[in-house]
Image 1 (cartoon, one colour):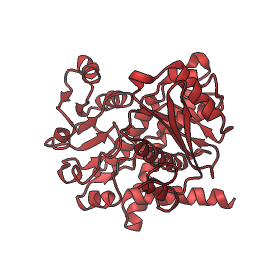
Image 2 (spheres, one colour):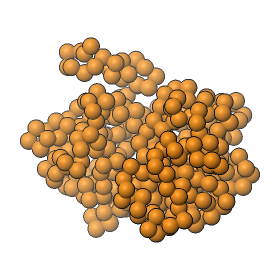
Image 3 (cartoon, one colour):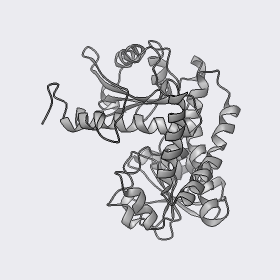
Length: 363
């Protein structure tokens, strides 16, 4: 069933009626000349202009793309709030296979669409988009971050994203085992692309035993050619069942924690870079019941957004790294709040973020 625009009714119900909705603005964008079809979702500007990346992905349907934009932008509101940034949450998705339809003309058209929001949304990289793409987008839209250093930007934000996830892992280890080191721990990383391969480097430097999987053979080879001691398994289903796994790090697409995976997790901690890891409400409780400590994804993967936000004010890497290091303390705070309130860490994090946004609205 659809409404007069042809958009499935369940998407509109999500936007206007569900707890996952509450978005301020959703923009459907099209440029037929270039083939651009995009969705820009602004969840909240209570803390400042909405900030979030642009995902370029071959969604099966337009409805799926809209739903992803809604979920991702909501997550950015919470991520930016927990990172202490003066930014609300927004996200954009471009529909299509970037390896087939991404062109300069399409990216310029997208830049004009973002510019039409006059600063209410600041864009950056995400899955399927890269620094070189943001350089093109920035030619039509001054509210663009994640650009190359040659064009006044900070470069690849994956570096600090991985660093922040590593800090979240250290905090998780401190909470569960009383020691922030990962030395001697077995860590499984699902997805060793833009962020995952940097995370593997941190883990190996800290003395962890690393197991990886990725759908892209070249991504796996990049790791194993440099670090032959890293173990490779066929897929995520095998990874979550690895005997003796201490930490599971989902670093690909969302929904990694669901009714099909949580019952089989051998790890005691889940801490990864992927957005929206909890497939549906209630999964966070399933993790608690199984005794698995979950580090909220939007907290630990905030290093990248810290970097791109800093770019708007004149990028300083050392300043950004210092802010990303505080993810360790924020994660500890969330675990302490969860224990004190008798709720899952995901709920504790949501409460803290919602309190900050509410205070900003009242102010």
